[in-house]
Amino acid sequence: MSVCPPYAPFFGFAGVASSMIFSTVGAAYGTSKSGIGIAGLGSFKPELIMKSLIPVVMSGIIAVYGLVVSVLIAGALTPTDYSLYAGFIHLGAGLSCGLTGLAAGYAIGYVGDSCVRAYVYESKVFVSMVLILIFGEVLGLYGLIVALIMNSAATEAGSCTY
Image 1 (cartoon, rainbow, N blue to C red):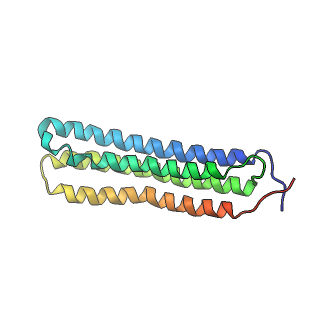
Image 2 (image 1 turned 135 degrees about the vertical axis):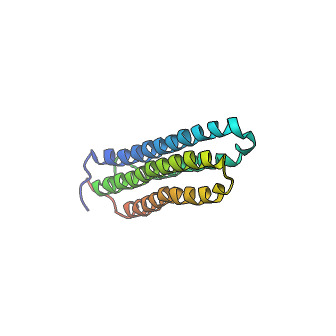
Image 3 (image 1 turned 180 degrees about the horizontal axis):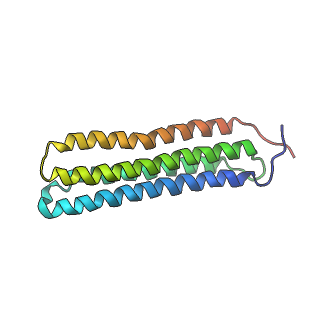
């Protein structure tokens, strides 16, 4: 048993913030970039708009991943009995979810914009667009899985004595 420093929860809260901020920025970028392509598609073929909303929905899921991880980390934060080890693990979990969410949002945004614009001219692009979007979404899912594993390791870390 070790003594818990009073600044240890800072690292846990930094993990909460990085998980929410980075994954939400990625989701916002993916939504905006894909939305630009959908707006361009709507002026040519308005009947294709509903099928083209898939990148926007997938971008929103990225933000949910960050929300889940930040709620789990925040639930494990206790100001009186929180070790530095748990703080660093929670920071790493938040960064893994947040940064992979940022990367997934960028990937979904670029693919969504390009494929939605190509979908105006060729309907065969739709299946390949969905497959590529799934592979972009998996980046964020991997970060979520790593963050969940790290969070479970932090809860088993033990407590401190004063």
